[in-house]
Image 1 (cartoon, rainbow, N blue to C red):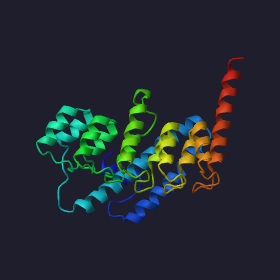
Image 2 (spheres, helix red, strand yellow):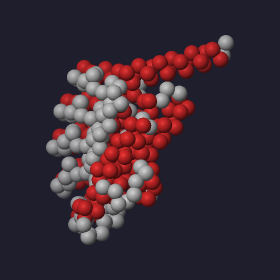
Image 3 (cartoon, one colour):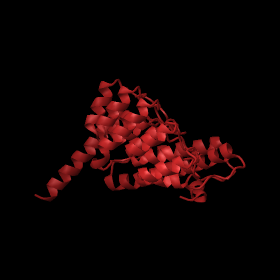
Length: 277
């Protein structure tokens, strides 16, 4: 999304303050949160709109953060080492590091080589970078950390689930924090919970991930798991002392959201059954 479109999505001018950006994001995110919509068709549209709002906020904050942190220095382009890490090309990455490639170089969004390796979930390349003293707590301009990139967003290809688990475990073993978060509060545990990955949730909880941390609009790991109907993830989080009474900014609890989703699914199933009789 272009920066101009991001400001338009939030209904803001480029000259607005950071507080105005935050306030606009909160208001629109609450108004368009899918949890507030019962009709499934409208819920899908609300989800798309909600994702656009989140993306717009992240782009604006990321751009402003980058401008402040880099000052007059132009942002780096993607380097050959970054590309090698993204592709999982161990031989090329090794050759580049031997030739003194800059391990700490960042692209325009603040990503360094280790973030590309974490996102690709390539254990060998990641180990190579760590041998050269890569920073396991690196993050991009928006605050996405190595652990968050390794966890990934959404449902992952099952063939990579074990790889991602191993990569996250390695990062945590090497001193990465399980509690890094973006500017609006999104964490690795929330990403894992939103996609119902029980083993990943279990690992993060074991490594002291803050279970009841919340985003700017009050979303927690539990509310995200409940919103998506991930029963096993919800049970695990509750056993791990997640607060069932935590409320969204709109006043709803995770269990209210889960109940609404269950009701919607039962209604849909009943409707399908009725149509076939």
